[in-house]
Amino acid sequence: MKKKTPGYTEAHARSGLEAKLPAIETWPNQFKGYEITIEVPEYTAICPKTGLPDFGTIRIIYVPDKLCVELKSLKLYIHAYRDLGIFYENAVNRILRDLVAVCQPVHARVIGDFAARGGLRSTIEARYP
Image (cartoon, rainbow, N blue to C red; front, top):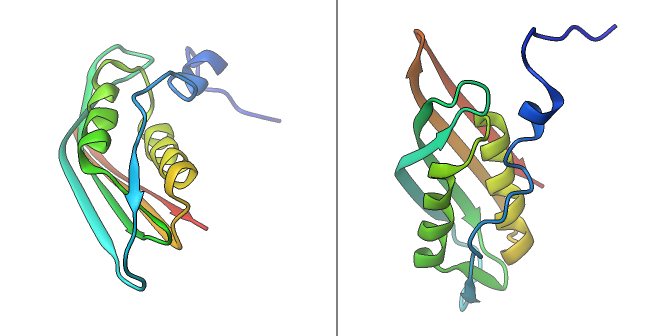
């Protein structure tokens, strides 16, 4: 039997997963076998349950194959989260999903290191493949 937390709905759980965000652009990679790390220290989003802001650092680590992520478009994509109601876990997994969809890396990780709220800090990591 599934145990539900009172007040949390399926709509809360799915919030932000299919919202339209700016496109992440790419450019042709010229080399093989290297790793790129991108750090976004000013990530913000909105908790879909409380409406309060969430703050954190997003780290994207990937080995490009044929395409690299264009940084200005990534910045605009990440900054669009500031008005989006989405849970930490969903944000990290969505960022990974969207990144993989546009650049098909050899492998990738997205790590969200979120600021303390209510005495708890969360670090979420998603990996591809």
